[in-house]
Amino acid sequence: MAERPTLKPWIEAIHAYVPGKSKTSDGRPLVKLSANENPLGCSPKVLEALAGKHQPNFYPDPDATALREAIGAAHGIDPARIVCGTGSGELLHCAVQAFAGPGDEVLFPRFSFSLYPLLAWKVGAEVVMADAVDYEPNVDTLLAAVTPRTRVVLLDNPNNPVGTWLPRSEVERLHAGLPADVLLVVDQAYAEFLEDGLDDGGMELAARADNVLVMRTFSKAFGIAGERVGWATGAPHLVDALNRLRGAFNVTASGQMAALAALSDPEFVRCARDANNASMKRFIDDLTALGNHGVRCLPSKANFVLVVFEGDLDATTALEAIGEAGYAVRHLPGQGLPEALRITIGTPDQMDDITAVLRRLCEGAA
Ligand SMILES: *Cc1c(COP(=O)(O)O)cnc(C)c1O
Image (cartoon, rainbow, N blue to C red):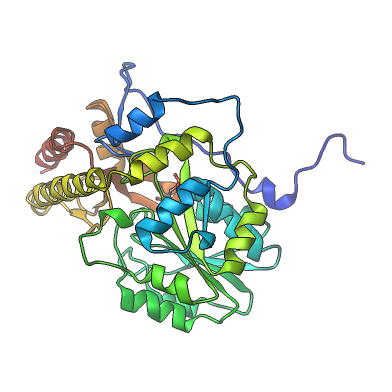
């Protein structure tokens, strides 16, 4: 008999989350451009709702009824086909747990949301990563990586950390190429940042197919990451599976209030999107204007840019200098990206600071 409780071997392989640096070397707090949070905060309606009448002694509505009705009305979805979660993170866990286990494979693009491998490892399933093509998710490599053991395919679209986006034709081609018994999860965490008219068709697939879930979150464009609210939609049997596995009172009372208020202010989300897209375009143009120092921005449809350092300046040096200037950005060597930094789009002034640091380094390196 072992002398203490023994971890399951597949849990042994999991490392606890390691947060990035939060202070400069002389102890000043860093401005976080590392978690794709909203630099504009959230809608004033959310702050009003949270300051209003609130009775924390009562359990929340376990079914988030009012919130699901409001989401349904906003998206034209039957609320019975919607399930809310403690962030979309909880629902991603539930989706993988429901359909994959030991001996099964969970497939996703080589560069994807850092949570995805954990979803598979937690249930003892194997991670399979499809090759990227110049960092981007690719439908051909995904389809080629499907085996009889594939149970779940995860696609974050726009992609995190790369920022690129697959159009409807590609998402449809991916779905059409998957066996009917493989679950496709289209994770639309950044969908609110897409320009009008851009739609990857995930919602339509979730409405008509038996094997598609779409995940959305209030953490990014809505700016209430701290309240932990997300939702999923799909066929009734898929929603039922998530409902069995989610926490009974998973969305807190304040989370439900905050998300309802956030939904009532679509103008805030549009403003956040437009500010993000303008600020991001300027940032990319400014870095591109640095010339041939090998600092390359991948095109992004989200609220961050993946900057790849392919020349005389390397990502570690850039990370340190940006840190000394007071900013935390994301270096992802653990995800196979030692040569890149993922930089969240902050306010225009913050982006100008980052640009100035990189310009100084490029000129110094020349
Ligand atoms: C931020 C993010 C989420 C959202 O997670 P929450 O748990 O809702 O905060 C989901 N998917 C991706 C790809 C993300 O980047």
